[in-house]
Length: 359
Image (cartoon, rainbow, N blue to C red; front, side, top):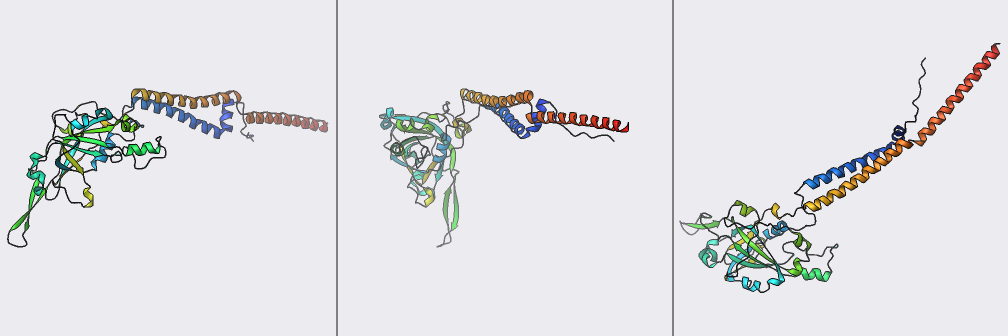
């Protein structure tokens, strides 16, 4: 009968290290995988030019998104925010001028409103005011992680942002208004009920006047991306769907109308012009600040060295295992060797005893 030998440990250093310390080896394999992942991820970041800057939480896309929800009524009364009046305080304000698609919203009974009957008296330039909380620059309540003192935060929150805008064209009701004939309850004839469609085939140049104490101490505004391409004179689809830098209202313009905010969702009666507008901005990648090459290089280098540290830890453990092996396995090997020598000595003694007994 062939003797079946049990599997016994040997003096193979690295093999013993792996077999005896399998949980630790599993952990080291995970650490090695993390190290490789960091290095690969860092190289991907370095090559990707479309990574948004995480330091900018509120950019111009978010500002215009909040402005989309605000409806303003057109009023031909002259505003006090004329270019000449704003120019007197130009040193106190930081001006940002950007284009955005806008939409005219004619209300019920537009045909009876002042704009339809006398649209020539309405200018194409308007002015209104905002608060930082209206467009999401500052929250209503001070965040717990805010670095501003409460008095400074409240001071910035109460600041007024002046906005002037130049609309590319007036509202034209031709081919946008339809008459519906309704039977007259008091006779055989019909009454006409007019309804007009909205018009969003136009854009406006918004000029935001931020007080420098607000602008320079609001990180999101300072880091917000502003396109470096100025608007073309020709209106096309790219002008409507993309934002460009644009010139503010010229000081020669004397007639600047008022734009009065009104919440149309609460059932308020329309203003006398019966015509509203609001921005209709869609996300523009040109307004998203991306990480620059230098920042991406810095991130890649940090991830590379983090990955190399993890891989170095695994390499040190592998070298340790190659030279030291498993102490427990070595002791077990030596103990089994001593047992085999002792058992062979006992077998020889018993064999000699049997031979002497036979004689």
